[in-house]
Length: 368
Image 1 (cartoon, rainbow, N blue to C red):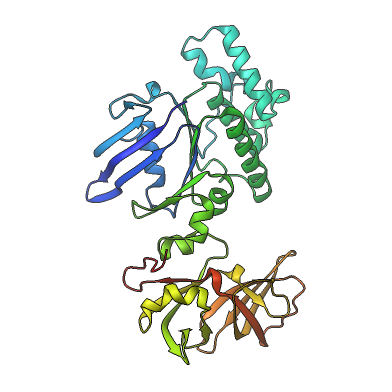
Image 2: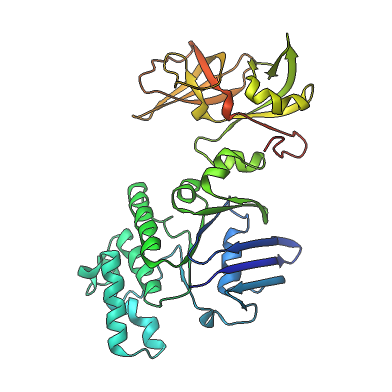
């Protein structure tokens, strides 16, 4: 078991800075997920930790040991890649045992580890099969099993579920979460899928253009995003953003977007009033825009009306794509009992308790 530390880590490819002054401390037994769009530096950070790329500057530590110059095989890590990378001519058993055989591990120990890992992953009945006889999900479990048998201090996962279909992704996601709880080992996981990050991680590191934007628990990232990028990346559908001005009307603070005006409840206004008269980016999640016919009790409600542009029935909920008076599109996630037809006006209730304002120049949150 081990902690992991990125200490002012840089990675440059010529003039391109792929990882820019990365500082993260991963606690022992933590499940940390790197998330961000393609090219943000998340996979490069994982490869630096694994020793598959050389660090341009800074230090990486596993436990108390600086591993900058330690070969990958001696770092006490195991990595699961997006590609299963199984040997097609070998059985499942031999694929899982291959690394241990290279290390000249005693045969009895190999057999014990392989069968224990197979039991954990529910692939004991597949040990005699070849990879071509397995489904994609089963192949991925074999790849994970190959990592488990090494009994490493740190597990690294590089988008391991991206080759699976939607249903199998959900199933395997749950299996990996249970696996982390059972092994009680440090997991570091890379994905572009924020749903994977939200459901699996104890902490999430959000990256963009090589820079760490925010690292926190899933709930804190969702409720208190540090900037517009994090607010828009975490959550599905994404947060709605509007260019707006904070104005005062008859002693009440309001958000004026040009297409609608929302009264800011006093509980919120005391924190927002110092920015009165300023231009802001107003952010509200689709979850916090309700049809007035089905409003959750106890919300700090502000009313607006909008025209329905698109209706997406999801079964347990409806996504309404709406147009404001100034033709700004936004999304509401509403109760499935709501009846809404394209082109008609609907009355909405916005939960201002969960609204956000950001500086339009820096895009940083103005209120913590």
